Amino acid sequence: MTDEKLPVLRAHTSQIAERALVVGDPKRAEICAALLDGAEEVGYYREYRTFTGTYNGTPITICSHGVGSAGASVAFHELFVGGVKTVIRAGTCGAMQKGIRDGDVIIATGAIRCDGTTPMLIPIEYPAVAHYQVINSLLASCKTNGITNPPCGLTLSKANFYPGLIEDPMEMWMDAGVVAVEQELAVLLVMANIRGLRAGGILTSDGNLAETQSQVAMEDFAYDPHRDVVKQGTEKMLRVALETLASLD
Image (cartoon, rainbow, N blue to C red; front, side, top):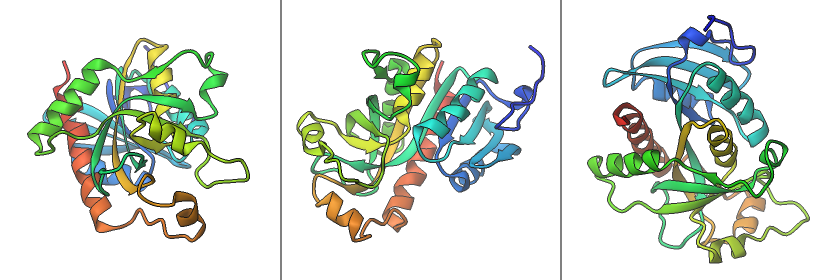
């Protein structure tokens, strides 16, 4: 394989590890890279910031993908071109079941494809599911980090963040047992699965839609993902994700 420079990530393929952790925020990528040994920034363009280092001796790439599935799919595609074979998305989410607290860590088993991008890649009947080895390893890493019985189940990947004039069927998804809503996991799972690669997701709740009037909260600007409880949960999530990537066979 030739050592080519990826057109958007701006990293060389030789600088991409076979295992990757993807996050939305470029600043979170930098924070996560600080947990690695010998981390080096290998690319930075637009919302895409990429680092590579090692964790417990295992080479791992960290890459930010921004907000929304269309832009995230650009990062995922180029990571796969660069040789990534196992990838975990770590991000914040809105919890959708009562009892999930702010800062709680959630493990995704799959995602509902309301992301707006995956229907352009493969028919909607194709499911967005996490790889069983990634799920099992995430749960094991949660346990070793003192996180017992984390919520685990289907998530909703939604194209829009703020509401518009079309009513969102959020109560239906809650009644169906969906544990959380975010925006990018479905496209990651679909893109990995159609390539025969391993992918999964771990999330941190920054609010609970089942326990608040979410649309009113959004319109009143009451939503605040910057609280300490969310930051603490995010730090736990990142360590669990890195330990999982380093421990997977």
